[in-house]
Each structure stands twice: as C-alpha cells, then as structure tokens.
Length: 187
Image (cartoon, rainbow, N blue to C red; front, top):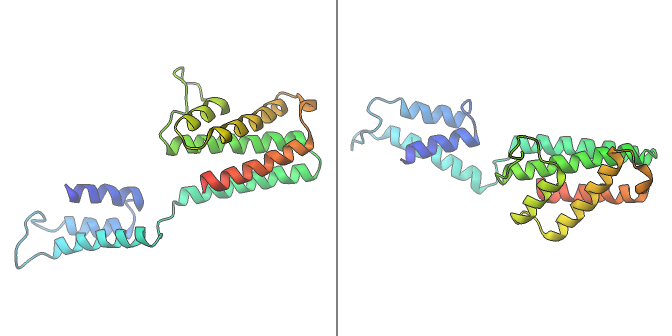
C-alpha cells in the first residue's frame, strides 16, 4: 500500500520525468522487489530514501508549484497592464482587464477547492456564481464576497459600454483590491 501511495505522491509532486521518480522506478524494477531478506534490502532502502527526500523537501518548503508561479506572473503582467491603462487615462479598458484578472483568479480558487466551474447546462460560471460558492465554502469571508461583487459590477459596466456608471478613482480602487486579493488568495 505505501509503495503505491508513494508512487502516486511522486507523480503528483514531481512528475514522471523527475529524479525522484527515476529512483523510485529503479528500486521497483529490482527482481523480487516485494521480498525482504535479511541479507538483501537495498531496494527497500532506495524507496525509503526517496520518501525521506520528499519529506525533506516538504519540511523545508522546497516544493513550489511551478504552475502557480507562472499564473501569478501572468496575473501580475495583466495587473501592470491595467495600471498602465489607468495612468494613461483609459479607465474603461483598465476596468475590463482588471476585472478579467479577478474573474480568472476566482476560477483558480474554485479549481483549488474542487468547486464547479460550469453550470449544469455546461456553460462557464461567471464572477457572481463563482464568488458565491467561494464564500459559501469559506474560502474567504462574506465581506470579501461583497467587495468582489462591487468590482464585478464595475467590470460589467465597462464591458457593456456603461462608462458613465463608474469613475477613474473607482477603477483605481478596483486595481488595489485585485492586487491585494490575488496576493492574499493566489500566492
């Protein structure tokens, strides 16, 4: 049982092309792997060594989710784009870009929490349903839910051409919120 669980853990954490997985497979490929003899137990110590290496990585914070790092970099790039648009006076385009980062961030949080991303009809959920289920699952508070709702409205106004419904200052506040939100919940 533990050999199977360890193999699955290695696949999830490091992938099948990693040194950990190669060492694990080498030990498993030993003739009579499942026999432990008093004079021959190298295969057991090899697998135990891989498990200890994983424990070390976890204990010392050496496991960083590369996908999360890339996503954080993309979020930062889009938020910088939104900030640039704001500085240049393009509040409407900035609101759409910043709102898109917020929506994508909500999707990522739902994925992490194994919450649905689509409705029963198969259509992708929008900001508000994502927001509601994240608050209901206590991923964040009701207060944060209300803040997300506010900024979702600004984004929707911008996306639908209702530009007089919000101000440049509100989009600035939206940017600050989304920067803080992504930093707190997606890092």
